Image 1 (cartoon, rainbow, N blue to C red):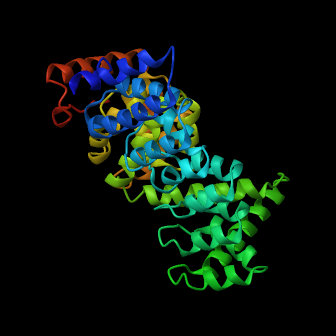
Image 2: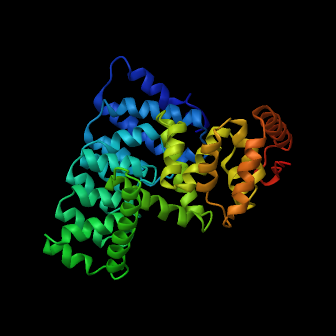
Image 3: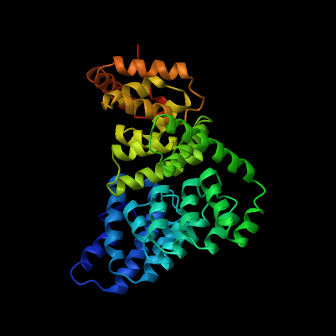
Length: 378
């Protein structure tokens, strides 16, 4: 078993043997077996081993019939950490293959799901509409593009968040579709009048302010801004273990696909995805995720200042990162201002020296997250 996890065992050897003369049936069996093995050993796999599984499963997916791809998709769907490239490949497959991943995989991010909603079929949208949860951003795209059957499934999904974006779209469609109108009346947990009034009032205020400043108004950008505010309000309530696990799996999957970079971090900040921001920092800093979680739990702003300064982020990006993180206790405006001031006064070289000293000290203590030391900034 250990040999197979390391990428040197019979499963990988069998694949290499098939490279010159692949047989579809043998490839299908091998793909299923590799996916089963991965599901059993994923907790013991490092990034390099997961990358190897990802590469081989992607290649095998090109050689097998839809039935085998669907079996593998079902095996990967419940995993919180799965090879990112093969998951996204199978999620874009025909619905018989993609369905399980679209409905159940937490590895697929909102951006992944929105892309699929925009580009693929109503059957794909129908699967996504049944997810737990469906965020307001994703639901909004479904309402814009899906058929009535799919919209009805979304409304009937108690784990679908109906906020200002999705709610306003549903109200617009309900005006012309009596089935949707009847279905939204069943959502007793949603205050439709409040959604309508808040959207109208917020839009009116924003439009008025922008008009006074002679700025062109993009209503889609306005809706995006409202979504950002709601996400940041949620992050103020603090770190959530379930949301962290989902965010970590999604950011790691993005890295598997070589699509993780500073642009992704800035996008997480823009949408107020605090747990994703924290996960991204852990990857960029090459520290164990438990360390970042401890910083958040103890409100160790000094550690964050030094670590981010060592990466030489621009002050504006640091400020956005700091404001987006899901601090366990709400960080006051004064604390945030002090953090920015300390960040600006600290040189990159000093930060790198402090951070490397801390890293060495941590490794000397066997790298135990429970024993990681705080980083102090004068």
